[in-house]
Image (cartoon, rainbow, N blue to C red):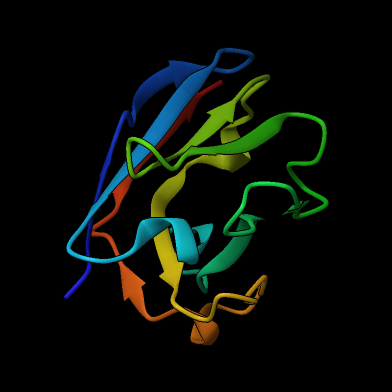
Length: 125
């Protein structure tokens, strides 16, 4: 069973930065596509970013493109989300997710097999 543990969330002022980490254990991390999703109160969970198993390909939601960067370190079984120029509308619980399909690269949350518990990001105006 794969376990995912997010960290790095917190309270930041608009324009600031945070880096989220997601540490994986119990599986073959280097074969999983990894995604970040977020969910704000009263809203559905939405796609933020995805990185392929090798790390060679990434994709972003239009709302975060140019501000957020997803990366991974397969030697450390960890995926990161660097968030810059944060806005109040980025406030949400952020989740990392693993897709055990080695060719996975989905923006759809139902494609993912494993989820972390989430970490809160709050951006004040």
